[in-house]
Image 1: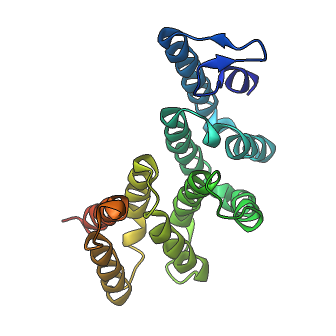
Image 2: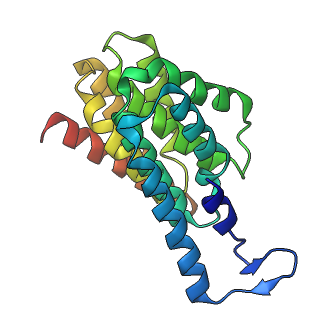
Length: 212
């Protein structure tokens, strides 16, 4: 945890109070150290206790998901999903962690990508829910909204998380989801490119889920 915190530097390439200019090689090395540290945490996923899980996701939400380098943030999302998949028996422990964050954080510019990442985590948890679980539909709606974010990493993760959830949907629910995603791909205007891309990622997830 401390390594990831200490290696996260501002995009201006200045580190610390002394404003030492960092070279591109130094920035890349710091990024590599952070991603390797996240990988190291994930290696212990199947051995984590409930307390470990709470600490890891609290750290991911408060620090790693907000990393100033998008590659590190996306890497955190993918590793978080891996940890969840190996600990689905602890869904009741993880779900409140994510819900508290979503209830506490407003949709500001600084927290939107983190919020989207947490919704990806919730979508991954939904795999352990029954098809008739009321929380499943709420999570799916949040995932649809997150597809509008201008973060391709989050959109890709939503696509991947959607795949196993599709099998839980009725034909009526699936039809409504397809309709909503197609509408996103038809959103006009160059400024709405990320919405169209998100719709395309969502459709890709549905297609993979139904096995086409």
